[in-house]
Length: 577
Ligand code: PEP
Ligand code: MG
Image (cartoon, rainbow, N blue to C red; front, side, top):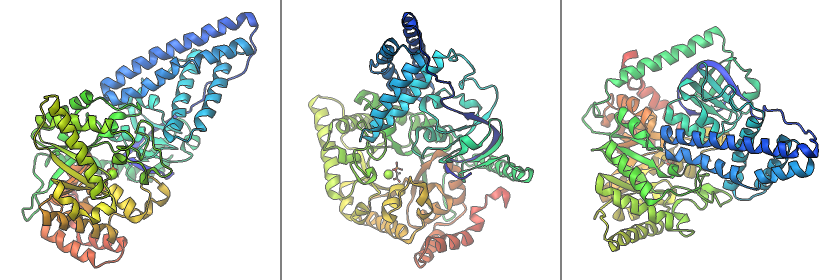
């Protein structure tokens, strides 16, 4: 089965199929005098659900960080909502039905309301409602303490239609070999969790949860986005061999962890890590990152629907600087709007082209101002860089720089410590910004190319739509020319250029970026060792020569074929040569 690989690696194991709505719901008339007993049963199940959710929230906050814990605040609020519980009790009393049926009836009505909403973020809350309803039903059935996902008897590959946040958080991740879901996207919470935990994951498999029998042997290949059901012996042997090769390679790569990334002709390349969660600072250090090149701050929101306070943020940014010292930490300001992370959610018909990031300042500058204040304060603690995303040109840049000045002025007015100079950069990910890089350069200290979005906008290929993913080509001549233009504009103005999109994590593309003149690459931490090994095996001169040859070719396929041919040796890990 083909899906979308969202967390790399291969896992082989038996399937644990999670089937939702497995609690039978039936309608039963109860005699009027028994109605209060039913209401009591409902209230007990709600109380039990509340205790469970509070415990989960605490455990998740402790183990995965506060933002993940916030998810459960929404569930707890639903439990307290009279529209759900009191209304269900009313249905029990008036219709004389069992608690399960009353809860189901009321939930369905609410579900209908959620679905009718035009706001995608609020529509999404329907999933939370299902989650809460499922928990109460389970507690009503007395099965709340039955075998639980938080204590698995052995290791499994988890297969599910969709893994709800509370299920994901309850999971005994130590015993999860891989995750495969019918729905989902790379930005789904479960994908993010799997990636940060280094567990292979494939989403968008459409029918896996129906077609994979519980207990069946499956292989999940998170790198290729595949699930293989009951693999044949030779197939299994091939997967095991790939898995073993990857293990050996990882082991061999560990030896260069503390070694700098220098090309064979002495050009120093800095490799940094991208991170979504504060906890990833450790992973970055373990993989030899020389700083954080992109901290996607909007993940601090999780699904809480609430902006973290200035103080909460200050602690996070300071913590990152402390952990990474002496290396820099690059915090991207709120890049919300294109997904479900913004309180209020995406408000545009096509959110990737709509009210995203600084375009939301007009709607409410307060959260942006609070973030900039936290960043200015934290920058006293170490080499902090602030990066503005989704800037479309000089006028956008003006808006965010003015807000930065306002944040600084407000701190000064309060007599608070605030760094005089702060390193400020802009993400070049909107084609119009790339084309006007020379006009942006005088006002910033660095450029970073966000290839994930740049490619999406340049090639008109939706980056989260699996149906067009074959058209998403990092080596497209337009992409190479655009990056070359940015590097030239940066060089002319003395502004350093880094790349922080996924393109940098693919060794072949990393060579191209170095050939284009980029000397700082930021990627998911796990990709650093391999990119470093490959870059240490080439000369910058050779990379430049290959880029010059690529510029003479007209398709990404031809460019890739030429590069693979020319770089065959450099791309083969030394120990397998
Ligand atoms: C990018 O667009 O390349 C980028 C680094 O940011 P994100 O993937 O978060 O949009
Ligand atoms: Mg981006």
